[in-house]
Each structure stands twice: as C-alpha cells, then as structure tokens.
Image (cartoon, rainbow, N blue to C red):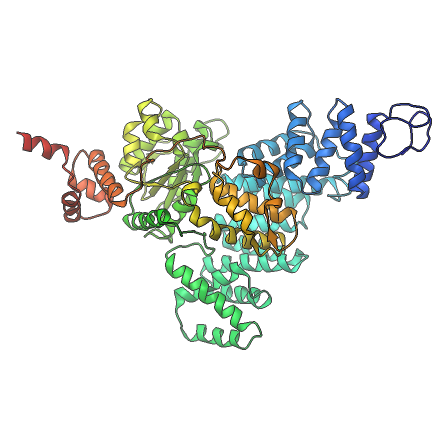
Length: 630
C-alpha cells in the first residue's frame, strides 16, 4: 500500500510510513479494505478494515467490516458490528437488510420485521461496483426484490399470510425471474388453500431452477399441492420423480410413504413397489418408504403431508406424548405451558393432526406480535368502515377456522379488553365482527400456549381468573431440554440431516466430546437453541463430523450449568398423568359451576365416564361436599 503523504510503498500492516513517518489515515485503510473485499482478497480486507475501525468515528468502516463477516459466514461477529453501528444512529438499506436476515436466521421474527420496515422507509440508492450492487445483486431492483421476499417470509412466520403474499408479488414485479419469489409465493398460496395458484407458482420456479437440489425441492412442493387438492396420482408421480433422482430424499420418502400408508397395498401400490425393485437403488428406496410408514403409523392422523418431528426417548417425554394423544382425542380446550423453545407449537400441531379435526383448518395466531386493536380484528374480523383503514369486510381467524383448530400462541400477552371477548367466545363459541352487530356462531377447537406463569398473573390481576379456567381444561407442561437430555442424540441426528439438505453439506454425526457437552449444558434456549447451533455449524463449516470447535466461542466458554431460564412456568412439580387428569376434572367442574353434564361435555367424555373418574380420583364437587356436611 502507498503512503498518502509521500506516495511511497509501505507494508500492508503498517500504521506509519517507514520513509516520512506520516500516519496512515483511516480513510486510506477503509478504501483499500473495501477494494480488497470486492476483489475477493478477504485476508487483506480484514486487516485494513479492522485498522480503520480503530481510527475512525463515523461507523463507515465498522459497517464494511460487518459486511466482511456476513459474507464470510461469521454471523455472530457480523451481528455485533451491525448492532453497534445501528446503536450509534447510523442507517442504510444494506445495514437493515443484513440485520433482517440475521434476525430471521436466529428466530427473532419481531426484530426481523422491524428491520425490513426500516429498510423500506429509506430511499434505496446503491452505487454500482460496490458490495451490494455488483457482488451480490445485479441491479437495485434485484436487491429490492430480495428484501421484499425476506420481509414476506418474516410476515408469514407471524401468521400474516395474506400480507406476506403481497410482498412476494411485489418482489416478482421487480424481478420476474426470481426463483425464491415464485417458491415463497407458492407456499403462501398453499397456506391459503389456493392450490391452482400455488401450482402455477411452483411450475414457474421449476422453469427457473438452476441446480438439481432446487428442482427436486420444488417438485416435492408441487407434489404436496397435488396431494392437498386430492390429485393423488399426480402427487405420487412428483414424489416418485424426486426419489428416483435422490433415493435418500427424506421429504419425498415421507410424503410418498404417507400416501401408501393411507391407501394400503392396492394394485397400484404393488405396481410401484415392483418398479422400485427393478431400480439400482431399489432396496434403499423401499427401506426408506418402510421407515416412513412406521413413523406415520405411530404419528398417524395428521392432514399435513410433511412430518413434524417428535423426539421421544426420555421417560418424561413418553408421559407427555401419551397426554398429548389423549388430549387430541378429547377435542377439549388445551393449555400448553413451557419455556421458550420447548416446542409448544409442535405439540399443538400434533394435537390438531391426531384429533377429529385433522382434515380441517389449522389457524395459528401469534398474540404477542399484534397490537390490541389489530388482535381483536385478527381474531373476530371487522366490517367495512369499522376503523380507519378498514376498506373492506374481513373475516377473523375464528371464522376462517370454523370446524378446525385455532392456536393462540403467547396467550399471556393478551390485553384485558381482548381477554373479555375471548372469555365470551370460549363460553358461547359466538362473536360479532368489529363494527358489526351480526352474531356469528362457529365450531372451533382452541389450543393456547404461553411461557408465563398464568396462575401468578391471575393472582397479580394481570389475567382473568375465569378465562384461565376456561383455557386450562387440559393443561400440558412441556419440560425444558435440560430435563429431557436423553432426547438430545436423536435431535442432533435429525437436525444434521435437515440442514445437510438445506445447505448441501455432508456431515454424518457430532463427535462424542460435543454430545457430552450438549448433555452437560443447561440449554436456556431449549430445542430452538440446539437447532440453531447445529445449523450454524453446518452452514459455516465443511467436513463429516461436527465437533466442539465448530460451536460459537460463547458456547465453548460457557459455564456447564449454563444460564438459568429467565421465565418460570406453571406446574413445575413432577409431571404425573393421574394428577393432571384429576386437575383437569376439577377445573372443568369449577368452570361449569359443578354441573356434571356440562363438565363431561367440556372434557369430551360421557357423564357416566365422568362419574367413574370422580370415584377413581376421589374428587368431591363442592356442592356434594356441602350436602354431606349437612
């Protein structure tokens, strides 16, 4: 590099010129660091940018250093740089774009949405030849399209599928040949049950696919569309096409296995089996299909084609699984308790897919992410003109889910005003849209979940007692990962398979030292934290075995006890199925004012069965107790 004072050549790592003694400016370091970075000389780029960060005060070099970390897969360091830059008041489209991506990858969906909103509030002017316009994106429109897709994905994770659909369409207006735009558009249409539109979107994605993996993934999605439309033969053709090209494709094997499991060994299935037998990879395919059908036999009843993984090795989780299956058949209101990351939504989906409403709608609502005014409209719908911006009538989630299940996640965050309306709905299963006076009656099952101690919230006056009892008919406590460590090895295997496929890697297992560390760690983030650690290692590194050296430095240096969870949950006493059943009966009786017929209906059992249970558990309703004392 050259000295800016005397223009003589000096060593790259120098802070002062060897000839004139002049100090090398941060501007020179920044300029050279950016140039080396764009040229792909990352080692030199890092030297100059780190030195520029130490000297400058305007955040420009730290932002560029964040781009270097982001581009080279050092996500934790990138996030630290970007957060520092943002905290100092700096703003730019690329800063908010990368933060949105990082927050989305880390499961921080609220913060992801906020970053993309900030991005779209700015004029997007990116110079040609820079990192974003040249290295990553061919045009400003391509950058904007990618941002709209990222924003749409975050909105979809919030359950705002219709809003996400608009973002995907906007992305394709900016860049029509964007395969990820078409794939996400198809998935949004599929969630909305608009299968014809979903098929068109996936066919466009297949036309644009550039790699075998992309083609196979989209063919699998297209097969799911046909399955849900009832075009079973077309679905089979799609899944078979995937399996023939990739005999170990777990999604296609599961999806085709589900169809064979449901259809039985009829002549068409036998013909397919004979066809697979003649293939070079036939034994592997038939083994994969058999394994899938065994899994489906154990977890049968779901309307989803893709399997939601459930890991049950520990005795604690075997009890929970049994309770989940019994709750599924009862068709009563369920309250799922547990720390963040313990799999409350997975459990809720299992209850829905294993119960009598499996073929009906599954409608999740993430209460903590929606304001009070919007939540009321989201749940109950609104009439045209009900408030500013209500330009048309809108159906609420309860109306959309008629016949199916509504999942109310983070129910403890609901405001007092909405609690009153929820209580009335749970009692009568009827409501009026916001701004309307027509009473609408629906048949909906409600499953709620929270990481809060609702009993404490009731005692503190933050949550209505009567609503708590209406929700708490069948309580299910999901244990934290530190209390079900026997499940960790199976989880690790599953996540390695999952992210190998996503990132096109070939890891086979985690080594013994890492598994031992996983067993000793306290897991404040539970299953979600384990999943993120495995994905991070697979995304960044190459090889066949994941070791402790592939984990973030903070994980390696953490005390083995780990961080204690920030939130305590209700019912931390030892889980006991008999005790839970007794508690469910007592609460059903209390909610029904000790009316045994009503309590039996709430529990989904006959009155004679309820009497047997009362005798079995020695439960004496309050009214009966008073009569005996008299």
